Amino acid sequence: HPGKEVALSSLSATMNETDTKLRSYARLLNLPVSQFTQEMPDQQFDKMTDFDMMVVDVTLPAEDAVERVSQLKQYLGDQDATVILSLSGGSSAKMIKLTVDKFAPLEPTIGLTKLDECETTSAEFSALAEAGAQISLLSGTKSVVGAIAFASAKILAQYLRENFQTDISD
Image 1 (cartoon, rainbow, N blue to C red):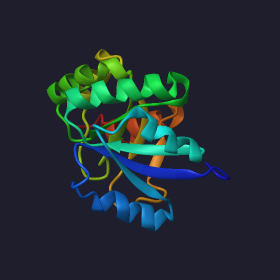
Image 2 (image 1 turned 135 degrees about the vertical axis):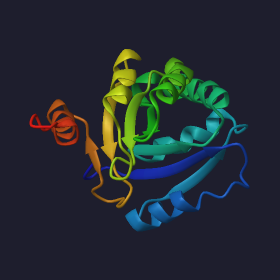
Image 3 (image 1 turned 180 degrees about the vertical axis):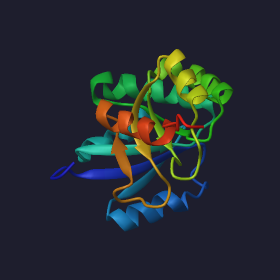
């Protein structure tokens, strides 16, 4: 988002949890980073309004994450919050179904990750489709900058063609 002031944040169970990857990404991208805990009052999240956009990495157990993020979406306003559920490209169809079901109350869009090192088969894409999941992001793991593709119909179709093309002569 050129011209937008973006910040990174972590929402975890305690302040003692170290999130060195998020901090190193923030340093690499020259972005401010902060940390929030599950028990912090909603008003503490007013810091978010200091930025045009804040990306919050939630590292809570699923049930706690759904409860806390639901509260924050209500506090901040649904129209100003989007939830992206990160799923590894190597997740099984069963794991996809369980995970998508757990986070369904948040109505997340899906970010498929590790696509450069994990094989995602038609069974996994079928599980996503059957769950009614909306795929919004595709990413690999080898690079932070420039590694994310927004999953437009064209980009997703290209990914599927490249990875599911079969040789008829076999």
